[in-house]
Image 1 (cartoon, rainbow, N blue to C red):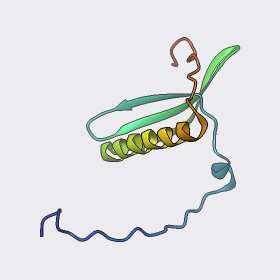
Image 2 (image 1 turned 180 degrees about the vertical axis):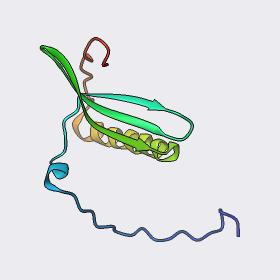
Image 3 (image 1 turned 135 degrees about the vertical axis):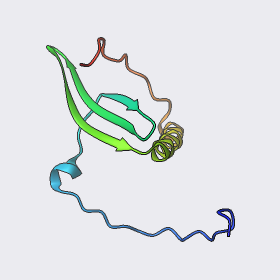
Image 4 (image 1 turned 60 degrees about the vertical axis):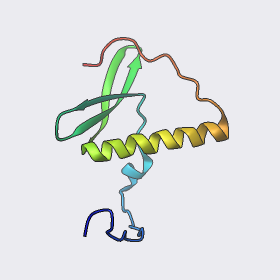
Length: 99
């Protein structure tokens, strides 16, 4: 049976568990993305300008396929967001490089 003729499984609900700190989330105002043949690495950073400092808030490692699905999902959700609340204004990014 080829991949095109395989029946697809119905979507299922998967319960998620997270501790309170993870559920609260983390604020990031910059993202650094790197990749190699096997993975994409997304570093979420908090960069403050006075005095200048940066802190790694979270690192997420994705497969290339999942990174592409994430990019598509973000694009779709940005369109929905702007359809509901209007265009997103882009702030001027912080100056300088993050070390």
